[in-house]
Every structure is written in C-alpha cells, then in structure tokens.
Length: 196
Image (cartoon, rainbow, N blue to C red; front, side, top):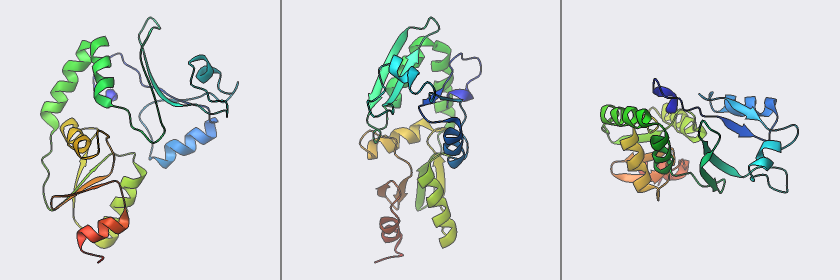
C-alpha cells in the first residue's frame, strides 16, 4: 500500500532466511508482490541474527522493523506466524516519521471507500491465496459477488478488523449480513444455501 503514495521516502523490504529461488516461488505463488524480497540465506540468517530474531532452529521470527534514515530502529513488532500485525500502529509510526505519508493516506482513505453492494461481499487482497480459492469457487458456481480490496480501502479494512478480533483476515465474507472469517468452503456453501 505504501507504494501508492508519490513523494514519500519510505521503502518496504521483505527479508527471509530462504534461498532466492524459494523466495521467487513464494512471490509467484502470491501472484507477485510490490516490494523487494531479500535473501538472508548465506551466510545463513546473518541479518536475522543481528536483529535478534533468528531462532535456534535456523529460521527467523515473523517481525517488522521500522528503521529511520539515520539507521535508528523506531519500531519493532515480533509476532507469532499466525498473528497479523496491527497495521494502524505501524501506520502511526510511519506517519510520525513522514508527515506527508499521513496526509496522502488520509486522502486515500477519504476517496476510496467502496460501499458493499449485493447479497455477497468478499473483503480480500490481491495476494491472498485463500482469496484466489474463493474467486475460483464463485466462478465455478456462477455466483455473483462484490469484491472489496482492503489494502486500497482502509475503512473496509477497519470493518474487517471489527469482525476478525482486530485482524485483517482475508477473505472475509458478508453473506446477507452473516459474517464468515477466512475461506472455509463448507461453511461458505452452507451460508449460500448450496449445502445443508
């Protein structure tokens, strides 16, 4: 989402202890990503070790670091692999470092809200594998639905966080007012009346 703002100097980087071919395969499986991925494969985990997030087993914790231009770490979030970080806290840290980012983000939020239309609304992202599965399911069943990308619509993202215990879990479905968090085909079929 940060790459949508002209004039900001924030750079998003991904880092993993996996090899370059593995990172490429992962990015391809997501349909591509919009930020560079760096390999911390050799010497194995050297950067992760320097930041204190390399586990003894040889893989790194799931972590986010915000580092300013002077190289000072301004924010650290180390979380379980199944947890999603609180994007609002992250954006607040970035807003403090780059006020023009805050202004640009507020303008985007004001302009981008898509109101849900129809009986079936899917809140999603472009990179989410379960979102792709849900799209394929709807296409196979010939079911029409409204899709809202929560990376582009932060008000929709806030709606999802309200339903998903503070997480931006995708896909999240609103089926005639019934909320389903994440892709579970059996539950989805029941809500749609396809399965009893």
